[in-house]
Length: 196
Image (tube, rainbow, N blue to C red; front, side, top):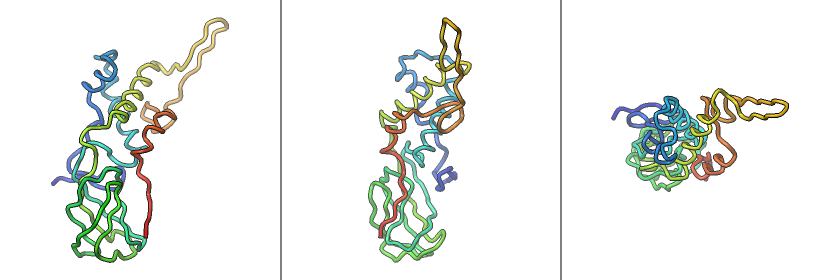
């Protein structure tokens, strides 16, 4: 496998595609922005923003490897909310079996010592296809960015008033997440929890 480091502290096999492709974007938006040269770049930027807000890659389902620190508790936590398999667990140099949950909790059958980089977990995580609400968030971020051409956020007539948009509320890269977007992403967001 050719692992690539992600910004979220674990490796994935291969590279990450955007969460939606241009055909999916056109389907979600009725093709209204087909041919707009900004869309491809903005789909990439919106995908990165959504992933950063969630704290993991979300989709597609991929083989992953995480090197984990431990606070000495019974559980290790993987950065995912959609864990679909664990293929190997190594604790302090020893291979072991483990129980695991869909939300990313792994309980090795060996005691996990307190320390940095004491466990390595090979696993599969992510949705095969991005869930429809997540795809809608990505396309909505792109549509808002395209619609705010030249940075104009609002205009008025009589008395002339123009206000300009800031680069982005969350995430940068010319796309922003609204409060509704953040609410839709809440169920995909990694929560760093520790159980004993």
